[in-house]
Length: 241
Image (cartoon, rainbow, N blue to C red; front, side, top):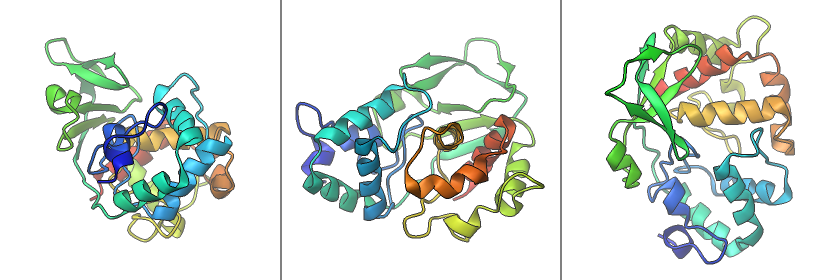
């Protein structure tokens, strides 16, 4: 593990492994890096640094940390981290459950924590993404598993949108992201990603927060997606292994 992944560098370069975990699996509040191409990871840092990659919700801390880190990290540190993460196998630790009711949750830091003692509540048009074992998750155990509660019918609806684009909605994702949705060159993998993560870049692109040239083709792709469409897409992708 490179030093920048394990320890970071004071004052402004946080250890990559602290947020994205040593095996690159990531957490609901950030991205999985395992198996991504070196060039793709390096490009994200360059876009954070230039301002081409921003967030539709400026008060969110994780992207702000990445923007700050990108100003201080060196090219050699980026290359070392990118090479390390690119060699790791993606880990799929998400169980998707379609349901009408979900545990009551509270915001704990940058994620949702389930309160199993409280009454359940209607899911509405939400994805409720929680760690199975809160203590294990808080200790940043890379083996933590997650439950993604999604509205009934979301997985099938998402599969239709992903595979066909749907009528007057979007295009089939495989045309750019690969036949198995595991990426194609500098186009990121989608299969098995955290639904919380998938939702955020779709909103960021739709809102205009992402201005980097690589996502320009995506603007038209996401233009007509509703909140329910985005939930469905994220729900289906989370079921893929």
